[in-house]
Length: 212
Image (tube, rainbow, N blue to C red; front, side, top):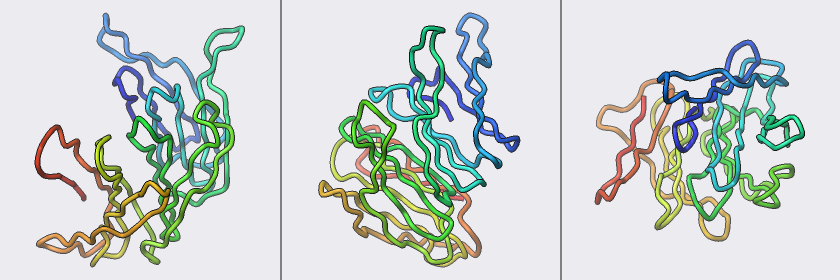
């Protein structure tokens, strides 16, 4: 996962480690700068928060833990610290791409979508559950926010087992998830949706969602 500026990269591994890479513009390559440990299983997903909230990364793993890491200043320089963790059978995580709302969406293996938010935007140590909703009892696989800071906050969710397994939900100003639409492609999926991505609008009058 790249950060907002695409000058830092976080890679997740089956060996339970998370590696941070910084871009060297002169040599046109990325250098490994940190290795983070703590998970007790392969890491499924890694995600950077928006930069206005700090250098913050979320991970989810086979060990059924969601973890929040933050890069902080210490007497030894900048170091990554584990700030928070909670038990969650998560299969995908996505920070909201919003300037005004520090939120983390979590898709679970049991089929629920959950929205978490820290009690303080400047301290990601403690998180509260704003809302959760059952989407697909067969399980979820992937999520992607609508990448726009104007209008309604929306998220697309991919599920398991074919049929109607691609949904859009609104996240309202009351911090609640509400159903918006079920997406049915011209050729319906006959198996799980592996991944889904909502493309940036860039001023277009229409939206593009890609799934596989």
